[in-house]
Length: 259
Image 1 (cartoon, rainbow, N blue to C red):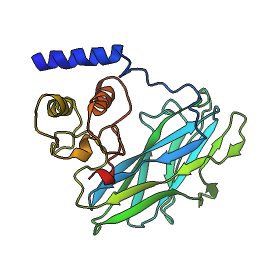
Image 2: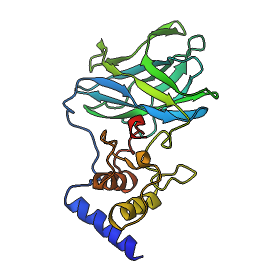
Image 3: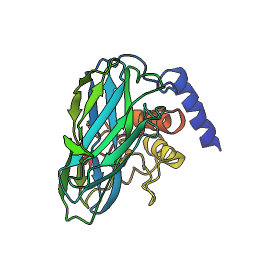
Image 4: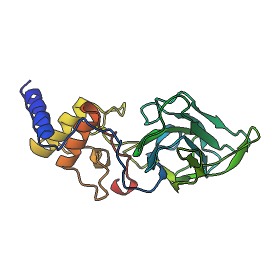
């Protein structure tokens, strides 16, 4: 109980200091070129996972389309979810898979809703699956152009008057290997078997960093903010508290170099 009071007090103090914030709206120019980016993840030799897809736009958009194809035919793009993303409010959206090529197209088109505002953030989650593959395997999830139902599908944005243009595209990578201890996303600091990310992970991390507790069993999973130096420190606590309780961004993807 004493620890919980201290933790809640620390969250309040960090909020007052501006180190954590509940305001994660993205309504101002991100200062980035128009971009679509797919996350990269570590994954076990067989199963299914979801890769986050992010986008940045410095002008209002009347449409977004992304068409992707895994480089390995054993990896299948199954579906796309817009839940929790910046365009979740748009009714006309969806996804379709080209069975002959395996390419998946996800799209959104504001009709009666406001245009997609300037900003940066999550578009949605690309769900992929694959059989047991002999590791290690690196699969690229890249943009492509295909014909689906007699319609040419590609990766494109539409500006406020409907003019189509191609944003910068950053492919994602699926690193399939049995040696990883961190799968998909960081945050499972206490390394529970369900790969859950919750309050016990915050408690474990605070204990490990400041109260003499045991170190995280998988340091790569404790690098919650995705620091490319693989440091596990106070910013990870702040990031995790933000993610779990204050509407901040989700824990970063696992970094292979931190394993």
